[in-house]
Length: 126
Image (cartoon, rainbow, N blue to C red; front, side):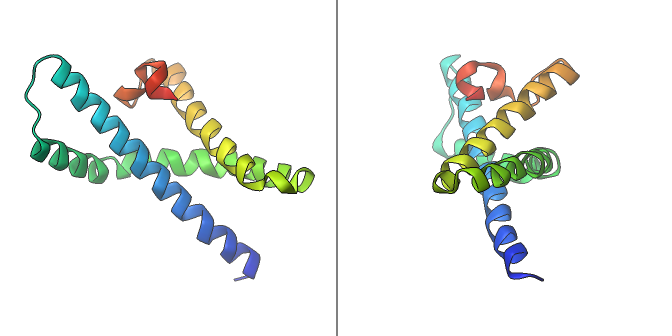
């Protein structure tokens, strides 16, 4: 494998995994927070077990969707870094952000519902 391709893959897959983990954890905590707001008792143990369950359970759907979103979005950032090499990190972070927002907006438009409950609000989407 060429050194450039290896370097790209060594950055790409951790970015996908980190994004997935943060999005899954955030989504779970927002939902549990909403339940608490309705008066449901949510202990620390429940938060931990639910978070773990969601991290494992969403891999076959949400992780794959994030992977696809990044496959489509991050090459745009790679192209733009040729024009603006000093902004490489900013461009990749922005491309990842746009890819995730686009993913949720497309799911809402195509499916007519929010695939991830926390993204129903602007706060959850952003």
